[in-house]
Length: 67
Image (tube, rainbow, N blue to C red; front, side, top):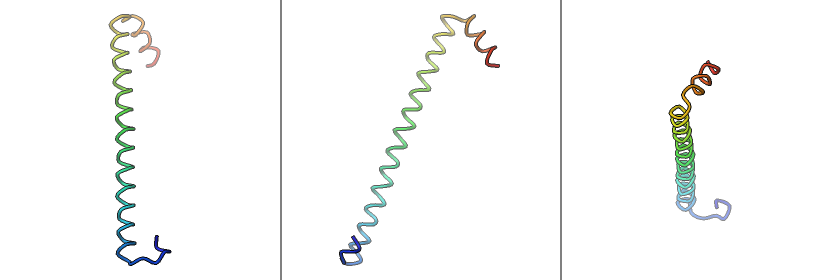
């Protein structure tokens, strides 16, 4: 952009636009990443709750082995 020789205002505007676009892109990617991780953890907790309800003795043994 700067190599084409436009006015300094145009170069500044292009830089600010790139900065904002990059910031929004990073924010959206981070939001999706955290949301997906949260959903996965919630799913794993629900699986453990169901296993604890259905097979409490096995889950106690599993917990004892971990600790």
